[in-house]
Image (cartoon, rainbow, N blue to C red; front, side, top):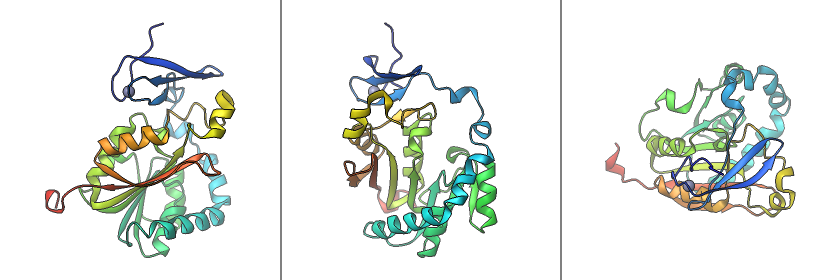
Length: 245
Ligand SMILES: [Zn+2]
């Protein structure tokens, strides 16, 4: 069987990782990256895939999400003091609001017009669009966060490289994404709930750390095998101060 080559490293040694209801996950032999071979989302527009009804749940759960984000931010304080922050795929803005309440100069970027409108109603600074389209200034942020975003994008490496560009020297990137190497994910196999048509990439701690390192980051923390199957990774942009300012 002739399988497509790896969308990240280009290697042609590819194997089928698992198949679920017509969704085929492939894995690259050399770099071990796992991706969805036949994404349905390409055929529908982003605004159709995430209609305003999708965000009503986020609105209802605002208080709980805001409280969770406050806890995350307090934990993140060990890696960086408050400065300027950008939350990519910020939805209705709960993380932006939580960061602002703790002294960050916080903004967000969100491709959904419906979610952006809800965030702006709360007085939050949110740009509507995809990260690459906005063109944020170089070295402009001290912290960039992606909560369950990287698994949705067509080219995660491009996102990480763009985040590196817009981070200040020693700025941090914070990511959460499902961990397909988690024992629970392995146990569930193709029945794991995170395997679905909107998740284009399936990271393991190793494949995520490897992609971050090659984009210029140093791994600061990786919480991958706790109770929850998503993993949390914090990494620092290793760039010299006078290179980019
Ligand atoms: Zn590869």
